[in-house]
Image (cartoon, rainbow, N blue to C red):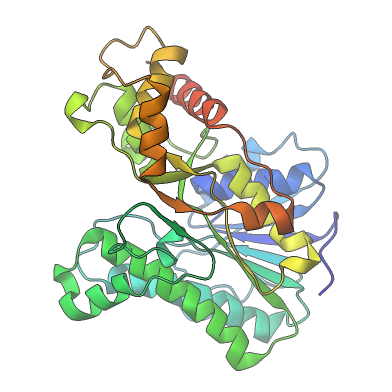
Length: 347
């Protein structure tokens, strides 16, 4: 499958989100033109203003109010050479599993059906999945997950418990089922275009999307913000077990997934290893010493080594080997996340 090239037009769905706005920027900086879907003109104009000085690529937007509607992407897909499908809900507050399942699955299959109908000559579709579609919450650390793994536990919990399933299970199941539906479309329809899945863990990094108050922060950055603001205590430490990636690295992963020929038909974890609340507070103390209500972490290197050794790992090495993706250091990511939050919210 030939890769798309600079000058081509890429559709980025859900372009106003935390990861997707960085992905739009990554495409523009490398000379691709981008059409983004947004839910309102306000979100579209924010992005248009944000990217107005980009010299190598041009940004335009179209409004798609409800990604679960039949034919929602029929117009948006016309004339594009590649697609990054990034529009999907991310929260743990759903009452019924269907509140997450419907937009996640229908949105994913809908964009593929629209391409089949209105732009069958598109070259490739990249879907933003998650390690949520890979992980097994019953596995105890230490353990390493790879792209060969699938989350079957969360969909089963939702099937058996319905609205009584946990909020995390509902979200994780939505990602697993949506990605399953993505690959099933290719198996059933054998289109001329191919697909790639990007599976990031917890995503950190600077904010460039429209976010006027802390309550509007995406889930992963909101957790880091709570540590910075002293909303957590020593009792919350060490808060290990998470894996992370810098938002700019996972954005670049989407670009590479659309451009590297060998990526077709593959899944890629874009993960840079474990990170903990202990890492957060040590970074905050070093980079922002004026913040006084932050819990005191354990700086003993042996403690970090032990914490890492006892972690779940989502192995992101395949993205490096196949896509050439290089990850930023955790120190840079945490520092620049904090700088962005302080600039945005003036504290």
